[in-house]
Length: 143
Image (cartoon, rainbow, N blue to C red):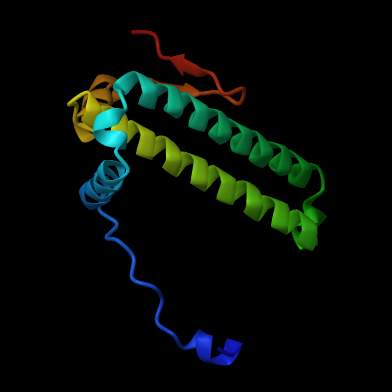
């Protein structure tokens, strides 16, 4: 197939983007591969830590590239630099997705609703007062 004709092909059909639909797709995938029921919340939590390490590595690469750009804004025109930023963003996106998959699987194995976890965490933090300083430390306001 020529490049010209592939431009006019419709994009491949993708799963819906709402969280519950994606969560169910992940769970069906995990069941088909016997992750559920053969894994455990502990095993999935361990996998979450592994994937979090990859997320941390990608975040560190993005931070380094941001520091380089801050020191030399002309890098924005450099094709190699732009490719490195794109690769780091792609690695971050991939690792964040993998973390979510392991959390979905772990919560299912523990019979815990991940959305409820998020709601409960938000309820706990929503009234906290303070700001994050430039060093990345959240400074609580005095009560």
